[in-house]
Length: 496
Ligand SMILES: C[S@@+](CC[C@H](N)C(=O)[O-])C[C@H]1O[C@@H](n2cnc3c(N)ncnc32)[C@H](O)[C@@H]1O
Image 1 (cartoon, rainbow, N blue to C red):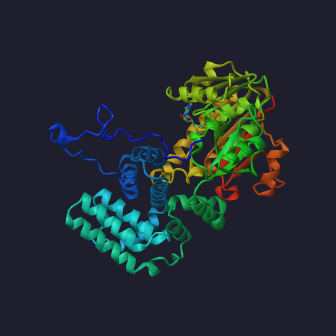
Image 2: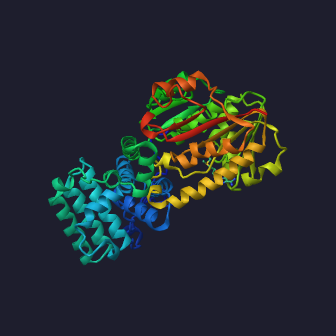
Image 3: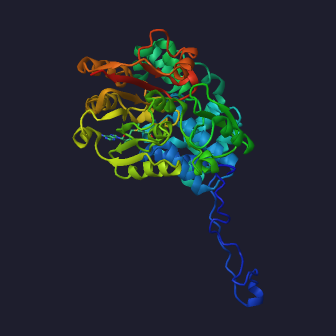
């Protein structure tokens, strides 16, 4: 198994080795040929990799996780430096509002006048000073000034030095808890969320739970995998992982899940590549379990790419039956096919099309089970994509909710009488979740909520106080409850 994300085995990475064609070191003087010194390109430091990634996220709207992975692969940092770069990228985006609030007092000419990379450098350095105890303040400031000197003129490095030295001097005062009589502002600045989002969560969940949601969104996500039951048991997977240096424990939430720490990049593990497991969040795994498909069923996954839930459905069906896995983007068909092939699943058929048109593509009322894992605002996965706090708006939530309503109406046409429709999202917005189901039930008398979930799913949800006796067939998991992604799942039965 691979030892880590940075163990890419590239050796010299194309850099000249100094070997002659005959395998001997060339001796310039003896050959009578003057040797030019090879100029090695300077390797980027962890902070430079983080800074470049943050600038791309801020300027080009790149996703932090994808951009960081690419940058880490290019930079070939040590494992420790890759860890620091990762911490700086996520921490700076996660705490942006608090950092800006603190910097605002010190940047006298105003943020608008700063070049984008300078603002990002100040934020990244303020994150180290205010929130990372393990980095000495002088190291954070000196590194920032060195970068500023390399990239800008002396005026810029002087300004960076001045702002950060002032910040360093006022640290104890600036680390004081935020006082604000307005809970939206207090929570919004303390945990760095926009006011509109905090307000929605206070309205939906109350002030205490809203604050827990916000705090939990700034925690690092769990690493978890789903064991392929067609290949091995969960116990076997845990011992295999443990033997290979991972710290692996069974999930409390899902029967298929293993929580994994340490030991390196799971996507490069042999077990992943040979189809023993799939990388997936525990909450996300509950979706296929709630679907409870049986071998031989005809199943439709309306919005399926990259195929996490499709392949789970096929595994639970023992690869018998037919799972149509649809996605609107043609290039994503291959992603689903690759996942099915990796896991050795033949029951999956990937197709391309707008899910709004599926009712004209397939016979009405012809599926035993339809899953609509809908496109959504994604606020349940803020820990993995913190930039969505700053890029999404309330108007985006309304727009995606309108699409979900239309998608649900189409999906409903395809379920057989007696069949099942499961609706899920990775968000915690009531408008996209409970609100969507209430609206659906009001317009679809052939459907009712189905609370007949397997006890292995319900038990941990009860123990974790996610559901109580009033459970009606839908669940909203919040990130602070199990440390897993925020997810909503509703199971509906077509009664006629
Ligand atoms: C939440 S993701 C699905 C994740 C997937 N179920 C899994 O578990 O791997 C939503 C997917 O819906 C797709 N999508 C968005 N709009 C769609 C539409 N109108 N029709 C079909 N697919 C759509 C997106 O391309 C995206 O891959």
